[in-house]
Amino acid sequence: MEIARSKKAGESLTWNDMQRMKYSWNVLLEVMRLVPPLQGTFRVATTDITYEGFTIPEGWKIYWTVSSTNNDPEIFREPEKFDPTRFESEIPPFLNVPFGGGPRICPGKDFAKLQMLIYLHYAVTFFKWELINNVNPPKVPASMHPLPSEGFRVRLERCSQ
Ligand code: HEM
Image 1 (cartoon, rainbow, N blue to C red):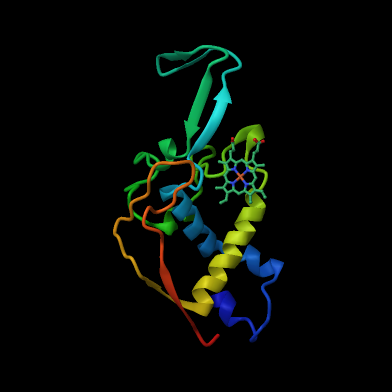
Image 2 (image 1 turned 180 degrees about the vertical axis):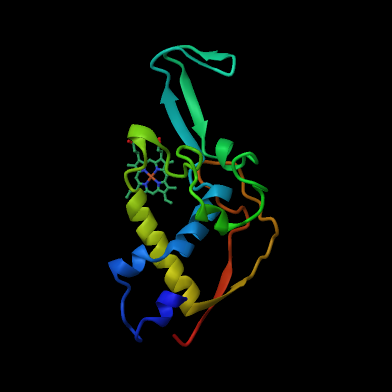
């Protein structure tokens, strides 16, 4: 809202504005923590790996999931609660991984961040929202990407800005 207020009518967002959208980015991180857009992907063990008493033999396929750490109460207190402020403190690496990690980390992550921030900015500053089918909590079938089974229908009303 602070960024929106600093703009003249019709003035576009700038790169500098994008750098300042810290709260919006924390909101998006929190959304992706609760509902990861991609659940995880596969790796192949290049050597025998022993972790907590279990051995994964070389050559085995491994499925890693975003939610294993994103819902861990030891890392994220009250994990079921929507709280963007939790990202105001530094999260140690590899604990919040909506874009994966390591050499195969999502190459589109900065582009995605930019798109999401721009979308969110205009969606909340130019429109009033009303959820039409308010199913709480929404049913989200397990699949590659989370899509509410009954859709996510919203009535938008243009604000004066
Ligand atoms: C919110 C948006 C997005 C999310 C949450 C996301 C998430 C991910 C995740 C979790 C992976 C797997 C990373 C790994 O294996 O460690 C991945 C891979 C990938 N993503 Fe994204 N992604 C997003 C947007 C995009 C966009 C906008 C592009 C392209 C413009 C993109 C292109 C790719 C590609 C090409 C890979 C495969 C990389 C590889 O295997 O080397 N993604 N993404």
